[in-house]
Image (cartoon, rainbow, N blue to C red; front, top):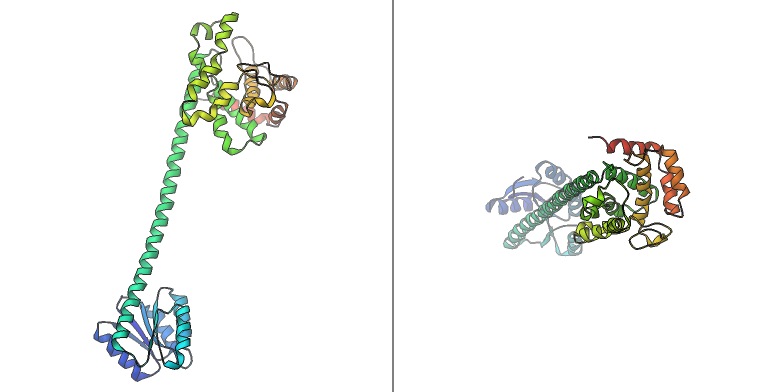
Length: 350
């Protein structure tokens, strides 16, 4: 197909030949058809961008030809030729996708101008569609690239926070990989508790960074092998406030503040630093309380030997309604032991 190809369809041989000569004279490559059916077959073979057709023909009319070729190629430009008696039909052809109609007897200049404009309009429509498709592809590509970059950023954040959590664990004797375990346990409970997916990232951040405030606790207190004095406990209990102050200034970590600040509160109001009670305590912190206690009981510490899962679970159930939110405890008991074992095993892998 070339842009100067044209299909001329007319059952009148003399009219057809006159049209042929007109278009030849201005450089068109002409295909000819005696009627509508032949016109459709010639079009299928040559696919010219432009068709000039008579409306009133035996067998297949110009309207039927128009409908047929546009089903084959919706971009084809069609100009119909009509007599005065068929003007209404010619107007109907415009609704079916014809570019223009020309009244007989044909004015040569008018016909050539209409043909040139029809081809130009066809090309503009194609270019506009291709440009739209290009823009859509670029949007899809840009969206995919942005999603991949965002995922890489999230992965980097998570890896950084896991490393920081691990660093905090190694500073507190006997809690190696504690943050990794409670992170896994907390997400498992969150799933059973129907915590919305949109809140899981903040939950994970808060769990990993729950003890970040211990950065501000002197080693003499944090690493002291024996019992702390009342004054030392007063200093130690400042770490939730220190942690809050550290991370609330970091935009992507602000959602972790409620857990960091409230992870030592208790359901009955006997915790610290604010003495929150019941549902005043953020849900993420209530989940953390359970998993923190479970991990403390089921992993060896310098001051205690690990208890079996069933013993630790029995203690958590006993403390439901005092230290722990009873509904969170129920969600915890729905987490399969096999999953808890897997989380524990992975936490100590290199």
